[in-house]
Every structure is written in structure tokens, then in C-alpha cells.
Image: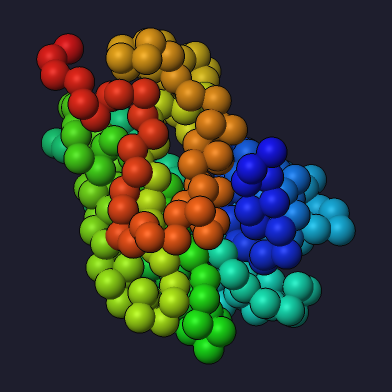
Length: 252
């Protein structure tokens, strides 16, 4: 089938790879012939270890983590072709109830981690004059509802980082794009859902989208792989919405 070997022979770094969208991206990359450095703060990422996957337990926002990820990918697989900045966290608090530490942790993971990894990946890609970076953004890059100020700020910043870095990178043969994800059945809300069941909360919220449901992580992974592949060769600085129509909906 067309596209099933779109990343064959490529080497990728995927952040937030232990579960959800990141795990789906990692598994799809490997299934289609790529090798992956799978990075996550959750030690569960080590369960992905195999001939074509090297796990790395690290906080993506910490100094040195991006350098270690890029160095390890090149050490084990000899090159770096793709970076997927997927790791993300959320907090549900009104601005008046949010601490500075709350705010800074969301920004650190969702934006600073992507900046650090993009910077180091670019350094490895520029001499080869090829590569692709895909950021996992959100409909929250553009739209909001109460209690997600830190998350919307971070995802808005990620969209703008995508556009600016795309302009800086394309002259080196490196494309930078993003996918604007909608509600996806992952565990991102487990720590903020009242009953600890983040998947159920996302499923319920997804019903408000025009498509009437939340996405399976594999559906977002497919868009990521398209943007990472040569099939998206004319796409530079795009934020491709994969949100079930949430971003084009008017009203409640």
C-alpha cells in the first residue's frame, strides 16, 4: 500500500514515547521501517526496547536531555533524520488559582522541551542538509476554554515555534511542521480528572466535536508520519489540524 515504507531507513527521536500518541508514533515508525530513540520521563518507556528502539528515561525540559537524546540516537543508529516533539502535559486551573510553579512546568515541558530538542536535532541535521521536525500541537493552539490558560499558552507558543523554526530550517533542507491534535484517548488527563480516569474524560469531551468522538492515538500518528515523510515535501511551517472538526465549529 502506498506510503507504508515512507520512513524506511530513517532514524527518529520521539519524545513522550511511553504511552498515548508518542507510543503510537513510535510503533508506527518502527512498523514502517524506521529506528527510534524513544524518550520519556516515565520509566515505562523502557518496555519499548528492541532492535529498532532505544529507550531513554529523561525529563525533556532538563538541561542536557536533548543533547543526550541526539547523541544516543547517532551513537546507536549513526544518523538522525526525524524529530517528533510529542511530549506534553496539562493542568486544569483557573488563572487566579494557578501558581507560578504550575505555569512554568507546563511551559517547560510543552514549549521549552520542544525548543531544546529542535535546537539539538537541527545541529545534527544541518550538515546532512535533510531532515524533518514534527511538533504535536493542538486545537488549543488557537482556541480556549476556562481552566487551560497554561496549556493554551504553551500550545500557541508551539505553533509559533513551528512557523519560525520552519523559516530558519528550510534553507538547510529541513522541514518543520505540526499537527493540531484534538481530543485523543490518552492518559494526559489522569492527574486532573476528578476520578483519575482521563481517558473517559477525553472520550466525553470528544463527543462535542463535529465528528462526535475523540481520536485513537494511531489516527494522530498517521498524520505525524505523513508530515515527516517525503509525501509532505512541499509543506513548510504548516499546522495541520487533526481535531475532528473542533477548530471549525462555532458555538457550544
